[in-house]
Length: 257
Image (cartoon, rainbow, N blue to C red; front, side, top):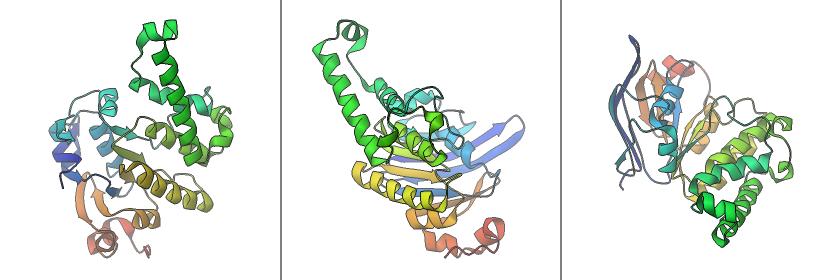
């Protein structure tokens, strides 16, 4: 199978500090991959390098065989890479429905004149945007909040809004940075169900950072462990769970079963 995303020998320096060293990653279509590691290991930096927030000092990144290294974040998103953030990146004074609709607009083709004259193409595409937005609200169980301002929602619901907004860009691969951060055990169970549903309904590959090991072990087919910007172990969940280096460097005596 041809890989959807390939990262080859990626290294990055912040000034004289080496944050990431010789990082390699290959994600196939529809694959769910996890990235774990202690705080400060460089996990979010990896996400930021691949998604265009930073440009790697060295290495190559391809998406669907196309070079994306050095592209702007919006260009990378338009090529099929959606993401959420460890710290919520939502518009504080916009309602939930408008969040999801706004994410569609980079895909519209009717242009300024079409909008000004309210052409048939404009009306058709706007109708499609609204229909798809409601579909996503239902999938992520946030339809009841459609007209609520985002800051009035419970934290777990805000997380789901951010994921729905990312899916509105119609990605081939979805990056999730700590998707269960701050969630209750019940919200965690709901999030597992939602991610499985998204994976099934949209046939999207998923790459996630997560500190809750049970969540990672239950969802991911392949897991990497990062320590000080380097991968110390990678493999299927059972291999990672029983890897002495992982246990010593990151998990300590935590029970992963």
